[in-house]
Image (cartoon, rainbow, N blue to C red; front, side, top):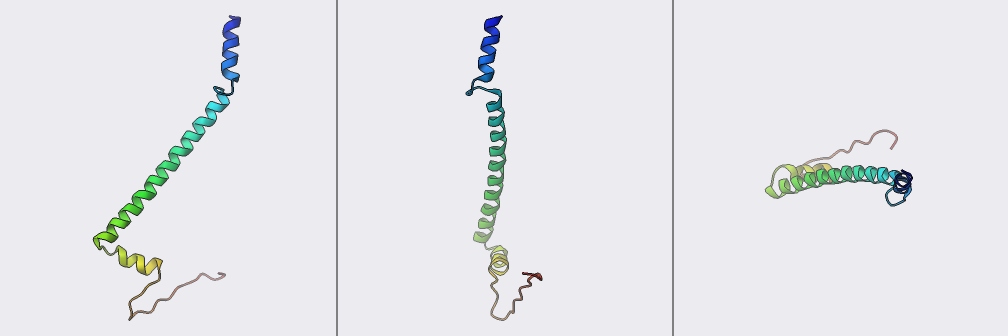
Length: 85
């Protein structure tokens, strides 16, 4: 019985296999899985956007107008800036 308690104590207090270390590893795994999901979602978004641009959808014009403030030669563009900026 004493040997069992000694082995159990070694297993629980050992740095390589401690309960605290295992919990930290589990938290790291959960965090990394969440980061992978976010990265995959972001990659999917940009992949779909690139394909839409390559197909010649209206996305190319949208990107040029909204993100790069480009315009047609006959248009005027007004940028609205919130007060205090």
